[in-house]
Length: 186
Image 1 (tube, rainbow, N blue to C red):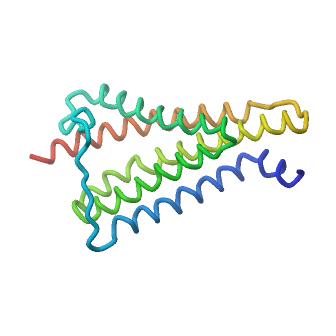
Image 2: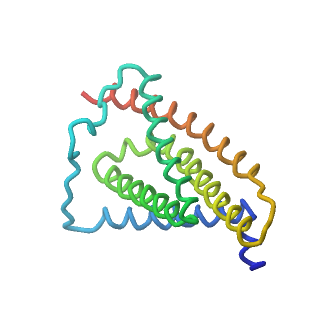
C-alpha cells in the first residue's frame, strides 16, 4: 500500500504519468492519420457542429472555446468517480484527436501548423494538470476510505485553478489565431 500511496500523493508524478499518456496518444493519432489509403469523413453529423469559419467577435469566440475546454476539464474531473479510469480515457482520446488533427493539418495546410502550435501546448498542458488533479482527488478519496487518512484537497484545487487560468489564456490565443486564419482565407 505504501508504494501506491507514495506516488499517488505526488502531483509531479501524476503530471509525469499524464504527460506520458498525452505524448503516447498524440503519436498514435499522428500515425493513424498518416496511414496510406486511409479514408475518413471529416464532415460533422449535425449542422451545429460546424466551426465558425469567420469569427466576428474574438471575445465571444474565446468564450465559446473556453466553454468547450471547461467541458473537457469536467470530463477529466468526473473520472475521479471511477478512480481515474474515465480521466485516462478522456485524456487519451483528446490527445489522440490532437495527433490525428495535427497530422491531417500538416498534410493539407502545413503553413497553418505554426499558428495552431501557438495555443495547443498551453491547452494540453492545462488538460494534463486537470487530469492530474482528477487523479489526485480520486486517490485522496481512496486513501481516505481505505486507510483512514485525513483528506488534503488543496494541491488539487491549486492545480485545477492553474489549469483554468491556462485555459483562459489558451482560449484567447486560439480565438486570435482563428481570427487571423479567417483573414488569410478567402
